[in-house]
Image (cartoon, rainbow, N blue to C red):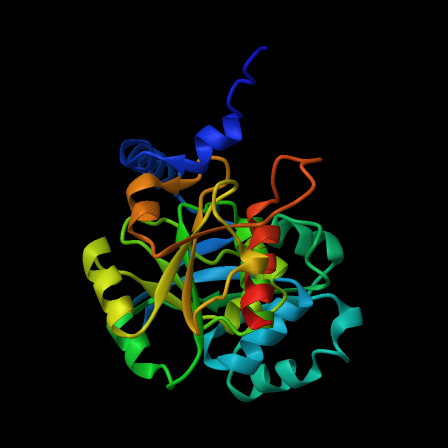
Length: 287
């Protein structure tokens, strides 16, 4: 009887600390922003803040609804004028420039054909600190997502969309994370990028201690070998820890969690995409 070799996904579901460091180093070296999505902002409110190029109707309307003062310029096709009249009126009142352009011009500005007729330059929101976020939480149930290495902007956008839908309190990011909202992520998030705050964590031990002191349990999400998420009683205050696409989660972080959870399936495919898996985990907690 032959022994089936281990799946590459099984081997990648938990990754070593050294491989995670190499991965993040590579991402930092490749993190120079493209002109289409990210550009240096003029000095504003006593400091320099980056501008992002958002595109997509829901993404731009969400910025206008949540933080209109972040808008620096708007580009749109003529057919969107009636739908965006409140935004344009606000731009006129506040002396914010807007231009009616051709659809081809929007494609160049967004570096994407998925602009949906509008592009806007907006100021990036800086992540808040963990202590400030914990102090702002009301009593009772709370849910957060700790992203350990997720780097694909479309996956990030889909996670933000699901997080907004299910009422996630925050996206927690390690100190060495290069992940940030981009134009692509904001479009996929369909407005979710404006609803879910980003929180920058301190060192790991301090972050774990602070979260536990606030009543949170941490659950490592693994492809195989964890408890069935559908058959496990989930705590009222929970942090789902999600590993990188392909590389998986840092092994020492997984070991430090209180739970290990998996999503059972038919085995017809090896696993769910990280964004799809996130939606399943969030829905089960909400249930």
